[in-house]
Length: 308
Image (cartoon, rainbow, N blue to C red; front, top):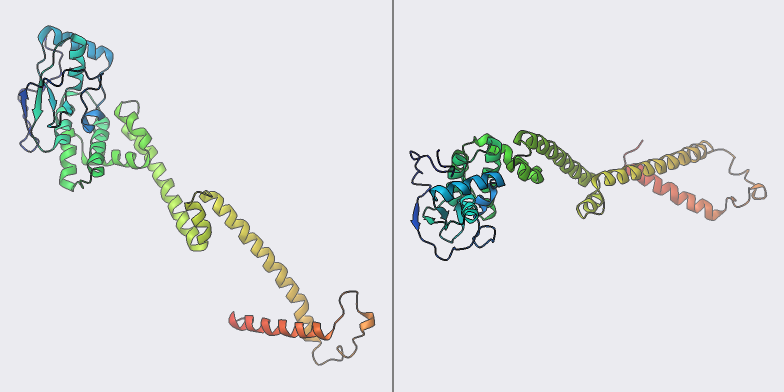
């Protein structure tokens, strides 16, 4: 019966740029993984643990045959490879052995060894690689095209699949864990992310258009006082009210001005009788002065707007 412990293919060797490990004793690491006495490297933490049945089978094998591959730590003591082996050792009551990784690209090493041992889908591996890439970027390390390609190669997936996973991380980050643990496929998550990306881009374009038309409303959206839909509804209500006011003003001027213009040069003014004027609407010299001022202002507006 072959050993159940996940192990590297004997013919597989890590490339020099990934780095190697040096086996040694780590007496200060005597705790268990469940006690959180040994910290996980961020990329290692992305890989899901074996389920209870698989861990028990691994523990039984280690109890019977021993630990074939040591738990690999980085120079700071974080686990790079072997978190399942460490947990299985705890179950089997077997003292684990350790080795130290001496390379300069721990994330690539973690992806390399785990992608070849674990039965994960391409979608799971792509998401893990994308998250490992985001860790590097958040740490201030800008990954070039070659580094991104290296990550995808070590994970055993295409750059395109890692790109899809990156879209999910940006536009539907809540689905990333579902992809990693296998409850949702990458294609399904990517479709959701694409839809949310389109919605976000639409919202951004709407906000840009709103800022061009009404900067104050746009500021209220940015400050969280209004949703983009609420802002456009308020904008529409304002436009409708402005149109109503323009309609009222236009009708008023169209009733008064043409009639006033028609009596120019006639005897209408001479026939005015104050005693016959409707209450509150008598034409006094003050009213005439105000009317003359209004006509002058109106002429200025017409000239400014270049109206006929």
